[in-house]
Length: 315
Length: 163
Image (cartoon, rainbow over all chains, first blue to last red; front, side, top):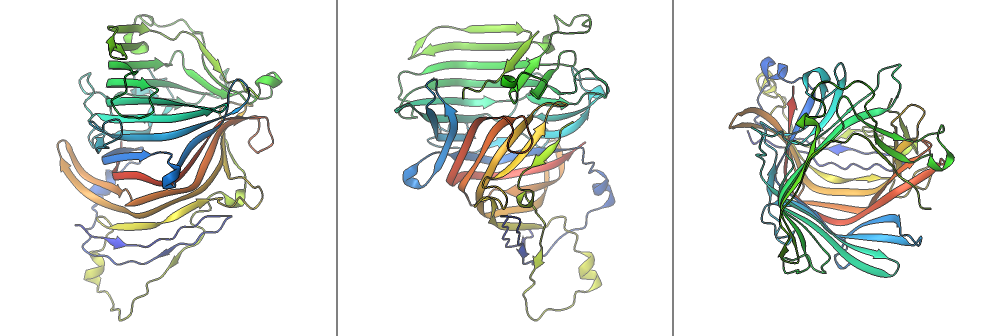
């Protein structure tokens, strides 16, 4: 079963040239039956990461670069964000200093990318094909995935000054999150890409600090303990429209990105304003600043009735 | 509704442009019908090493990297992934199929084993919005990402078909 075909590949794409060379030796394969073949439908793929971990950070001494550029501050000076560490690993990774491995998703409940029938999913548009990117779904209302640690530690260089900004999440899960896109029908008033976003994020501790080191000894940490966010933006009655403004808009708005939830145009169905499925919640078990506890914070039942965000170039 | 445009057409991933297979072995023997019938490709696998370069030294027409643009609304502007360039090099990436029987899952999965080493060389891209699919429109560059050096990348990616 553990047969291997060894192929040494050289793939080189530059200026339109490609060379591909392979050497093959194989053994011990088994035929695939018609039944097995017929199980493959190709409507989507599920993805599971097994014993996974990823990290990369800027370290000029070790020949590593990782930075974000092209941002300017209010004075018009260039801002460079050096990404000291971006990591995803298992619980107990100690802010990325001891990166553990993690299983993301399960084969029976994987991360997925697929085309779905809008008729078959609640809160999605009827009569439309819906493209969906999804995290594992919740089982019995609870997140059941293995928790992961993830973090983003940066040095922001702006106007000759340099500051640290680090964000870490410990034992986090994203179960139940998805983003769905669908198109408009011919003749529909807005010929735009539309969609809905469900962003779920649950973590034992979400911490933000400006410490020089990424370790745990930092005192000036802002910590959100038992943080739970379930953000619902857009549904079949009020989708999110994504567009880049074109020639029909004023010159200063052209080429800007707009994300918009319009006021509802139809008569909403009974219970629209009380349906929990359309509402967002953010709860924090305990907010702590520098070790001082400020108690719990909850924001529940928020419905996005209108949202309009447009980027604006500062150049 | 979503259109695609690309700059440096000649340089935009002409993957599978050439394929040379070198079975460089001596003293080969013919394979019998029985041997042949046992070859199916189901539980095979391979190990890949190599690198992929995108417009590392600029494209043939423009100096920049590859550009991918998507139009999100009719007559609207374009969401752009611009100046994709650099090299991603890897050693020991494995691809094979694996039979899994665990819990409530029973079937074959494609296993992509992350490489022993993975390295970016001058890899970068820019996220932008623009009034035009091609360069030359009114473009707002949101930010650019630059990556280089060896990255930590461990584990297996398992891929399964979904209904």
